[in-house]
Length: 148
Image (cartoon, rainbow, N blue to C red):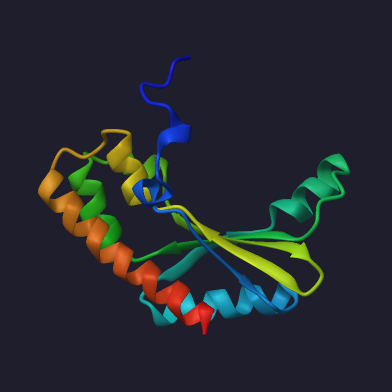
């Protein structure tokens, strides 16, 4: 498979890569990120621990790794319309928390809205630009709060 662009040449801003590090234990980081997401206007309809699943199913011996599937229903509804429903393949907007070291948790996010733009999913570019701006503000609020 040939990708029509060199992913290594992309600026992380183009796909909305954001991360920060929290100095706390893993469970506290999950709770903190969940609360900050809720305060910023995201709900958390999905959450799971890939590390627990993999450690149980294939004896992977993975360090703690957790996914909070964040969603703002009003924005998700707009994004479905702006992409003829195809953005659903990227839902939800994930906030990932992994333990880098004991007492050091990385919080990581990639914008599914910007990723949808890169993949050519939007059928309404003007609305997608507005959605990217709106979700960008929400994600910025999350990471600004976590950085304090």
